[in-house]
Length: 391
Image (tube, rainbow, N blue to C red; front, top):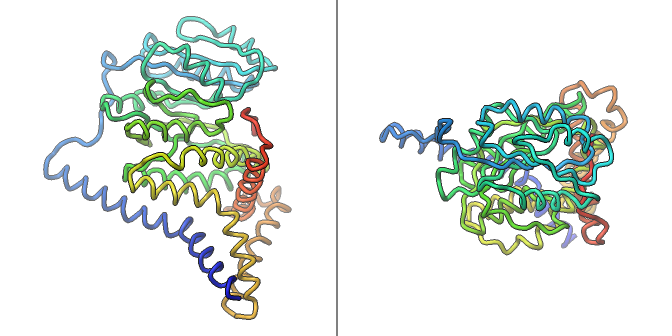
């Protein structure tokens, strides 16, 4: 009893803060910042937005795309890059095949030519190694990273590079929209819309934490040689840029389309890998100096998310230990109902995948379990640096 009650209140507050209070705080702060900027614009009439440079002003860029067994979508990716609204002579495209065993290498050999370069690695070394190999071959100072299935909007590159006219900007993160199955639309799709709103509000406060590995651009000087065991490079690289004194921006107008894992089980596999990489990176990034606002966002948006499975376990067990008290009993039963909802979502996922929000509990339980599994694998060393397709 003396231990259970404080554990209950601490866990309840942190869970509520992570998913409710922190987003509400972000909303009010970002709304205030936006209103202040609007007022400054009305008074000064100075344009706040950075315009996209004219064709002759556009900088040369090197776009790097690692690939492992991407035969299904690779031709579409190559076609998409050739259709970008960007001078072809100013784009160096580098595909790095990380020991692919399907038709990926044949497709890349057929596509190689002016503007498209290929690197074939004899064996899988992981995404970080593939990026290192690609960066070693770049000719330009602005690098763009993209996954092999991601499709850029025609003006995405223009939107990304316009910010680099400001020498204080080191990383520009694009926005990602997902195309998926009926199941992924009701799970990952709903969650991603929530996540995208948080990223936009954090960006208004200057606290962008991470990129989407499918679309972001950096200065060459911001790229650290990645260790083979780095598994979330789209988090490590922006944090390294902050360490070097650069700003990290998020541009919601730099759009790309990606394909979500068709099932929650596929997303579970991806989340386990993200969890392993997150816990591993935490040991190296916890000492990185950042401003107070970014530090608060890092703790609220990242660290608390990573440890949320332990908080949920603490909340369930402490409220169960306080069963004799009616209010705690109600909270315990509410949690049981939530987990039953998640279990029903799993059992009936094929029948309810088109019912709005029917699978949300199933999805949330799955991703929190994935982080628990990821923590165990990180602690026990049962992981490696290679990535696996989820579709």
